[in-house]
Length: 346
Image (cartoon, rainbow, N blue to C red; front, side, top):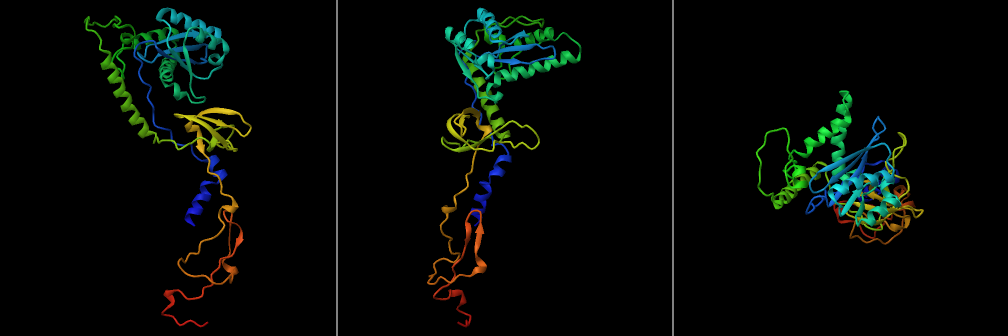
């Protein structure tokens, strides 16, 4: 009975719609590339109060990043900004971006194909999948807010901040982004001793892997991360945007999971439309059992013979799990052993 109650509660449709989101899956840190400007992450920050946008490009290897301030965010402007950067540093092997219309257009796709650049689109509605550039956006936005609060020129303050960032040893690699990018330290106003030692990339790789592993353990423990049990073909509930206070966290109609790669899930609606979502936005749907799934009720007293069909109407059972009322049969041809000490009138 306890198992039936638990199964009934877990399969309650309304309860599943308003329940909490599933725990995130454990982190899968991005492997560090073998050299600078091979794998890039791009994103648009804004709009700012001045109607400007900041186009940010981050190198996964060195953490060196470039910015372009623009008011027009069309694909043509994005391509023009990338061409300026590529003319200085060369063409990368891959670019990672979100699903903004500028990055999904045919013009952008053709530009990358012409230059032999692989384009990786992260899972929709999951900015954390493009974490490297999102982290830089947060720092940039903080500096812009400070400049705005102190009535300073925010464009100039961005340049000052970027120079300080590029020349400061990174907490993960232990080396400044400029040194990893160009193989040398940039001269600053601080007195420094010229070092002619050749940089050892193996040490940087090892330190990067160690710091990412430590961060993974910390974040997974803090978020209570656990491996997802979602499988292809499962019925799932998909997160929906909140329209008002009465909106449920999940869509009322279950979808079908058609593909799962890592923490990226592809779900299909009953109408046949496919969506890609992160596993934290998808929860396995506990379906209710049919009325015919339980054809009989087990007698609570086992290993005893039953010979008659005398029905006691006072012990009939009816529930959503069992369907229509059903009688419990209790007549026996002999008394249980626990009644041996009693004198029974028949």
